[in-house]
Image 1 (cartoon, rainbow, N blue to C red):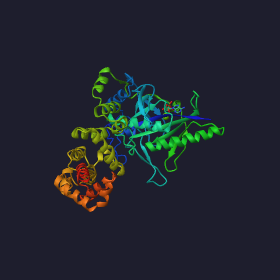
Image 2 (spheres, protein in one colour):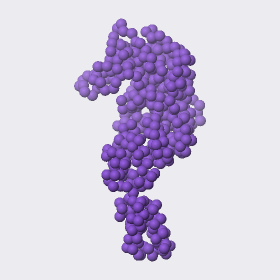
Image 3 (tube, rainbow, N blue to C red):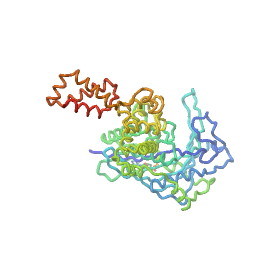
Image 4 (cartoon, protein in one colour):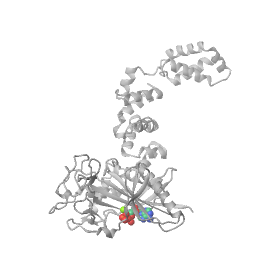
Length: 477
Ligand code: ADP
Ligand code: MG
């Protein structure tokens, strides 16, 4: 039988506020345990939560970006459960009336096609604390610094049909929250993670199969691996006549497998009810319009503009707008040198290559956009060749200064002095009578040999176009 995979993602993205969602404690990452948890975050009796206005604006911004309905009235609810890292005994979340309703995003797939994925809802909630197992023997430590950190949970429709689509969707949402500047999207620090709901069904069937939920996945690679494994596992069960158990599972990146964590709880298990400590959130059309007026250019619009304004291919424009930092970097270079193609080639080639090699983000590039523009200008005005430019780039990357300094200090300026080049050409011709004969007998390829000799003699500094021209003139006379 042929099986079809069905996936829906619940993405938790940490909102980039300075203080927590219901208290004034700091959200900064990496502080000593329990130094950033105030009475509200600890759930001490008698304290009252106060909503941080910044999270409402951020949720609206996200809602507008996915063309969703923003709820004029939304409600915070208590989701009751017991866990050591949840001292209140409940998490404040949104249930029946989330702040962001039905929306959509377009994802781009590897084969160049696109697909629209529905987003069921996005709601505000607080994060829980963290249990620390590593440094304790026979006990578990609790760090409540993260308790009360604002999260936006983004729930997709079960529209995704392969692990690759799930990754493309996750990447799209990641780019979006970073473009919108509502989250830093830092996956190592847990600011962007997802639960993947996975089921399979016979192809052609209209009913969904029983799903499992893979919890807390914090990398694009793991999402793909976890879903791939889970799909295989479910198909195996079904093909051997068994039934998939609806449950929550955990992905183990070391073993590359998922394993059961707990049986799936139903909404009724949580006894959701409106939090009596918090007023409903009312959002007026004026508030929405104010946020709309401040919206930045979004990835899809930017990609389209890059294609038209800079004559880039769909593919190049897609890569260059994958992050806002990358797009800004490219655009700064392209404008400075007025040659978008050259800018695109260097940003996607040399720069990205170096970044990937050292596992750095573009924001951490030791070569700034202005510095790269300075280098490319020297190619365009024939001071150096493209090949020498790579050597200069290497030196810039190592922190040796800007292009002009390096070119001067290393004596890399291209030799364009015709009489100097002419002397070299004469010499090479005089020293290689056999090759001269071959060329004159019609063996065009030998020209490359002569060019190579001169490049070798000048350590790549001769102007290639000039050398070619001189060689042809002399060899055919
Ligand atoms: P819960 O809140 O219990 O996790 P929801 O009904 O809100 O459940 O769904 C959560 C996620 O699971 C959504 O992203 C939804 O698209 C996805 N989902 C629901 N049913 C299935 C299914 N049969 N197969 C795969 N994903 C599913
Ligand atoms: Mg869920």
